[in-house]
Structure formats: structure tokens, C-alpha cells
Amino acid sequence: MSAHSYFLFFRPLARRAQRQLNVPEEGQDIVHSSSEVRDEILAVVNSAWDTGIAVGMANLPALIAPGSTQYRLDSELLTIRHVKQTPILLIWMKTSQFNLHRKFKLARFAVAFYIPSIEPYHVVDLAYFLLRFQDFFIRDCDYVRFNLVCISYRLEIGGTFGLLLYDQNLASAFAKATLRANQNPAEFKSSQYHHPVSVWPPDSDSSAVRSNANITELLLKVKQLARL
Image: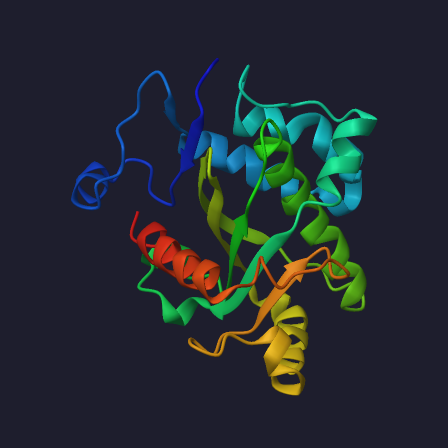
């Protein structure tokens, strides 16, 4: 499949909202993934702690972009070396800041993300980030297990923007992000929007990725995603 854009929405069948927000229609170059695909992605991500990242990487890319000839879907050494270095912008929020559908009532925390991928690594960048997020923050927060409740994203040539909804057990990770933002606002807090921000990998040179322009664009994108 030669599609270059893969969209996954909270409500894939909300066609009216998609038209109102000028979402590109599905076609040869654009794929709208189904709720069934979303459920499979959630199952792989939420089992990553038990099965391991390697198992997740063997399955998740093909769920995001099945049969893609545009993007890499493999987990070979070259691919893994690349995805471990891809910078990712994160903005930490609470779901109460969005007007979400009532079916997401179990979600308490929201993490917006932007991945400025280079071709052909978009899909594996997204897959590795979703799996590594679980692995890292469970370890970092005294092994408290949390679950990804829902996911929405727009994966396009220019990069991937998305919004992750988590249950109440992400509270420790959210508290740590908030503490970092208060202790070092110049690096970990948006001066314009006052949200905690962070960049993955933690030791990367993140100033370009966490620019005010990127933060503004990401927030605009996820506000739209929250309505879809």
C-alpha cells in the first residue's frame, strides 16, 4: 500500500465532524483506520509491559500501516537504532481540558505528542514511542501499571501529531512532569500555555523540538483531534 497519510480518530464514524473540520477524505493516499484497528493497537500497547517492546514492535507497525510500501514496518537493528534517537515533543494535560465524548470517562490524563519523523520511519517511530512510553513510565513510577484508554493521531509526511488518553494510574508520571515544570519552567513548561512539556529521549538536544511554534501547532492539532 502506497498511502502516505494514516489517520485514527476517537470516533472514526463521526463523518459530519470530519467534514466540518475539513479532514481529508479517505483515498489512495489517505487511510482512515477503524475502531477495530484502534482496539488492536490498545491491546498491544497495554500488554507491552508483559510481553516486551520487541514483541510489540513485531506487531504494532503493521497495525498502524498494514502492508505499507511508503514506510518501514520492520524491527531490524538499523530501524531500532533510528527510533531510539527520534525526538518527540510531549505536552502533559488533564482530560478535563477537553470536551471529550462521555465514553472516555475512564480517562483522566491526556498526553499530546508530535513526532517530526523523517522518511521512511514515521510508522516505526510512532510504534516505538507508544511502547517505550509504557515501559519507561511504569518503571519510573514505582511499577504502577497504567493503561492507554484511547488514541487519536494524524500520521503524515510532515510528521505525526496525536493525543493519548490514559487512566488515573498515570497520576504519578503526570505529577513528576508537573514538578519538573514548576522547578525548571524554562525547559519543562510552556511559557505561553503553561502546560508541562517534555522531550523524548530525555537526554536529547530538545530546544528545536520544544519550540513555541511546535507547541502551538501541536495544541491546535489535538484540539481538533479531540473533536473527532
